[in-house]
Length: 371
Image 1 (tube, rainbow, N blue to C red):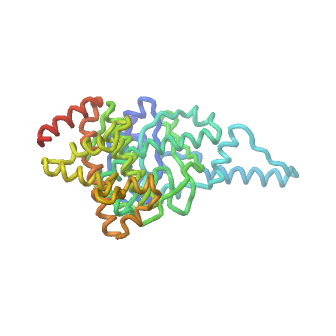
Image 2: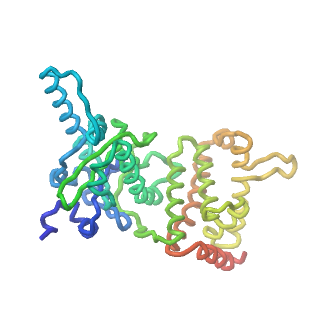
Image 3: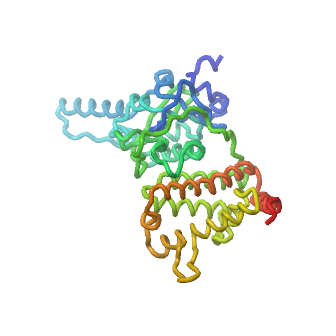
């Protein structure tokens, strides 16, 4: 009976909502879907623009409405001869959110990602504006777990034009972030908004999302947590504003994957990554040589440093000057994406286990290729 009375999007997460969780819905800019929602991992669902019936969610408060209410109250006081207009306590948080003037139409113009969360109505009503911003940021960062996986499978280091935007933000017409929270017990929803990000994605037109990621689950073991962090680091590389920064962040991602959060010298990083990527002994040695070129490699005759990472990090050079040919830089980033991609896939495969399972996997792979 209850499943028939709740809004369709709430019905998609009914078990979690009946267990006491709230439903969070946030915008996902620069993403276009087909006609059907897409499930991502176990907790997220992405809906095409205007697919979610916001009226059915019974949104009783949203920023533009709060702003209009406050303005109406101010004008009423002015007409009665009261010039001062004071807003105090919890009402101030909703007014500050109202200053963004985010409306239901902002949500309808974007794809939306929905998921259950632990926010309660009591927490939402008691919060000040800074706490509302923290709620928006926490919801957005959690949703980014799903978007990181989409970026990993569908975006390229050498082609930033198809990058989706940040979860919780809008298109470039608005600098704000927002989140809708729906509570099954009240059958009511509330939207809060504010500024919580420092930059937005601008290049290209975004991502045409036709199918969900092929990876359906990431475990919650030690390796699963490391895999999620590696995906987030890869996103940071994808979103870098310069090829130099993109290269450095890509190498940092490789170092993280190699060491599982512990510091590993580049020689150890090369060995660890090659264990995932190489299928033959010859390929292993090719990757080893390529890593020397990418990191630290002195000319045997002149002693001059040729390694790209050392020249950038320790000598202040730009990748654009070290590798001036755009086509060569694209090839370099395709190589880096290959070195990053297979190890992350293996970490996800091992994501229920501890770090020793990764060490054992790499040792087994090295024996298999005869190294």
